[in-house]
Amino acid sequence: MGILRSLSRQPAALFGLVIVVAVVVLALAAPLIAPFSPDDQMFDGLTLEGAPMPPGGQFLLGTDTLGRDLFSRMLFGARTSLIIGIVANGIAVSIGLFVGIVAGYLRGLPSNILMRFTDLMMAFPALLLAIVLAALLKPSLWIVAMVIALVNWVQVARIVYTETRGLVERDFIMAERSLGAGHGRILLLHILPHLVPTAIVWGTLGIATTVLLEATLSFLGIGVQPPQPSWGNIIFESQSYFQAAPWLVFFPGMVILLTALAFNLVGDALRNILDPTQRGRG
Image (cartoon, rainbow, N blue to C red; front, side):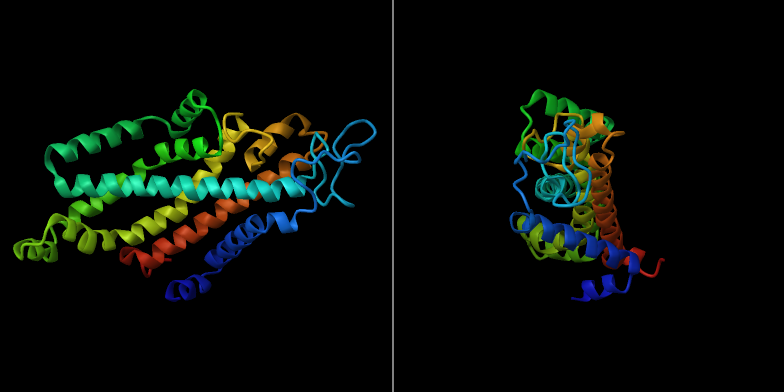
């Protein structure tokens, strides 16, 4: 509740929180809100010339190139994008926490091996690596989530490693060791709780990056495959109609932009609230 009160006192963070809540609610309620099935190709969904219908009338945001309701597809696409964003980012944060804590706590050869592997992964451009992995594997919802998780954990691992290295030298850790506390107790009860704020902040900020990366992969045709809608593949399917039917690109592009911005605003505010070194900075 204290965190929510702090967020409510920051206009930018409050704006981001409202957008995030709205997107989540619309995604969860998509079957109830959507006026049509996302895969229905309506007989009256195209003009006499076979072009998409513009926004208005029974089609709130118009129709796509196959006569499907764009509003319905965007609602169900929000489900796809958020599922990938939350699942992929959750896996990435978990991997980063594990690698960072183990490397920072053990030191020596295990630490060097883990961190050199992390450095090797960071040397590859994330988008290029994701494209290669997605091209090698058969694209699907869960494959895309796994691919994104495999390229997004390295930043978390590096930060957690640095924080863990500092924590293991603190007096309260030394005292626990002198009292005979085991490694599991020290890691779970005294080090991991100090890393929870970092995990929360990166978990929030990373969702924006994940949503953008999923949209990029889907736009390139190696992400979530049609007919399952996602914001990225909606743009991919409609790119040839950019001039004739600009709403097909504008609406999903605007939603992607707003969602990424909202998660970034909330994540940045959480960093200021949870990180003592950031408090008091405006």
